[in-house]
Image 1 (tube, rainbow, N blue to C red):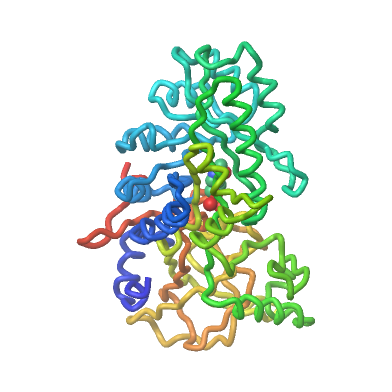
Image 2: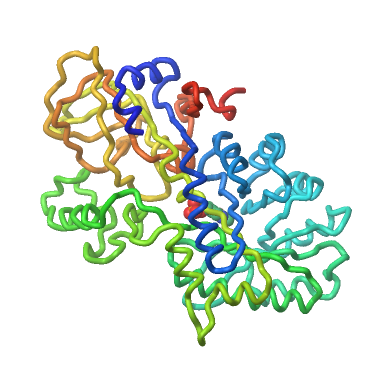
Length: 445
Ligand SMILES: *Cc1c(COP(=O)(O)O)cnc(C)c1O
């Protein structure tokens, strides 16, 4: 990212050639990120297989990078699945975790021999109807423990055991090979609880004759966008003290609850987290109950641990560049910097992106306009079309054709909510190769 930012001519050239915004990818950090998880499990005597959640980034370069590093892919739709199969991903390196599954998706997965994670009894019935041979499935477990928040996904262990019943025994349509769950949030403690509960569901399934070989603990592996916790806490304290509403667009509180809490706003991704990836997984596996660790529970049952990280393995893999279209002052005196970009191109389900962008001054640009601070606005004809809801400062000034770079956007931020409203085209995706930048195959036709 720093190499790109140090080359304003490159930034300008990429935007001229591919339009604004443009998403840049270099998936080389993925192997390092994922290996933290494999090593945390390995050092505790466990095999951990990583299935990268493809919904976090649609580029096919991600699929290639995961395959090259020996990892699998978690797919959430028919097209995500067929693109991976066409790309040469081995069926046993895929899992279908789609929240809603069409017959075509199920048929494609069953024919190829890809494990499907079933969410509910209707899907179990669908598999019975469609499978020509006993189908290997995972069951998505909704944890029943009250320490884990309610979720719309999966069914409780009791509900699954009842649904399987005697008619749904092994060899008669489905072979349950795994128990799957995915929890909202990033709590290590909740995952330790859910893993224990999944172990006891495995025991019940094995009593019914199923050869369960893995527990898939889903994603939600934390990462940190900021280098230090003080950056994070300082921001929340400043916002708390900002009684004039200067720091944010029209005084938006960004869901501020308590600036001293680890996670000041439930509406926002925690852009700084103390324990991430390998260390976080280690803390789950070391969690002890009655003198027994979670790792010991898994090892004793001979279970493989699987996980489906999205965002945290994409840490360092992507950035988004956009051109400055205009600078102006609104009627109420707010300086605005307009970008050739819309807010769905830098957005997750979080209320705002709390990461500072970088300004790359164009070498051929006019003398910059001096603005002390400004808000970034985008292309959708909506009043609230703010690219970021924080006021930004521009110490070197800013002018048309400068580049604004949004850092570390590879996990969700560039893709998960992008839309082509107003008939504006979606951003192109480029992947870095030894020779330079090429169009990712997701955009190549
Ligand atoms: C979204 C999702 C993931 C990935 O979550 P991250 O927070 O990106 O790690 C994994 N599994 C399932 C089932 C999901 O829905």
